[in-house]
Length: 250
Image (cartoon, rainbow, N blue to C red; front, side):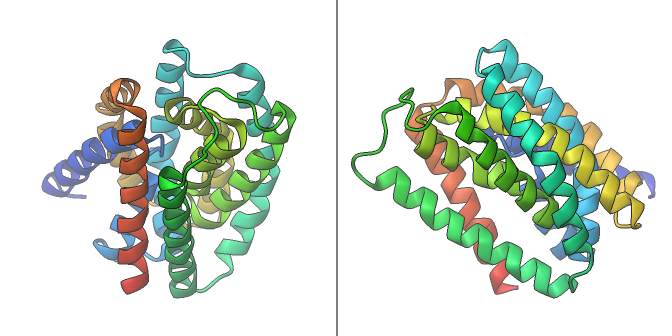
């Protein structure tokens, strides 16, 4: 890349890292559509390249959330352990799909999840924050599902896990996002290795995004810790809806 291109990608990384830290997404939800639609990458290459950035942002965001007391070890370890195998298996499936089909499936998935999160925010009778609706052992199912979606779409853990953890385990949104990062930490490593082994990761591009993201993800995490619960949920839902509609429309 030229110095101008490097500066542009680094700046994009700063923006993506801040939003990712705020919403507990590792930045992939923004980076993958951007790399595909604005930079002309195939869906597989966009997903693999974004994982380079997601690795750094995820671990830094997890560390920040741990220091803020948002991470409960038994949930974090259970979800992370159950996710890795499913990530590898579904990444192999994604690498064999047509790029356009994979991108459309990704957009439909995001739209459906956006509708669910909006409904769950507005529906009466949601579980109170902190209530344990299901025993913590069931978080292994969330980990397996998040890992499978991450392997297939590159960002499934960050999209699926927060609403699942708030709805099924009564977690606060900030805590749900923190545990999602714990799930995503091993998932991104397995996913990146699998995509890169098949030539579907632009390391130069991804590293530039990652360095930019590392400059801002901590600020996003701190802001998430301070925002009202309802505001954080609505921001998460709005971003899902926007990305899903853009992908399906294209």
